[in-house]
Image (cartoon, helix red, strand yellow):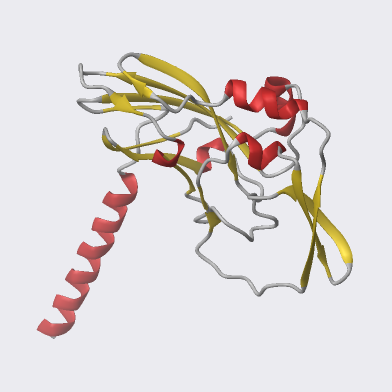
Length: 210
């Protein structure tokens, strides 16, 4: 009897701890420490992204506007690799893509069982497969065929993406810019978390519902 009661007590305490952990939410759209303040907003709506850039990037792209402000006199080196976008809904994790990966000259056409499925610039994931993005589940891989191609025609989107991206440089004040991520599926900003791990330490925030 005492053993059963002890097990029940342990289960109740464990459940309480889990709920308490779930209630500890990340700060919304701004986070800070002794070295750096990060402010960010996320856009997943395809029309809004087109309005921002002047071009349609297609489905599964998340646009995150990031502002970095140094808190101390210590210079901070900024790198795109410092950032990671995570979906709390399905566990997807994506690092930022460079302009050339979204609008480069090289492209990759992916087909499933002989039928055209999607075309993406090399470096991007297609249908949840490829580098830079992952999830908690491992679906069975379809029978995919790929065909690479190269286009020498200048892509005006490349210049726009390069002009708007968050600068990679050492900062002592404030900078702002965009980061481009791929997030597959029907997600909302409230489902996403932006994580920073760099010279200024570790910081994370979530986004407001849109």
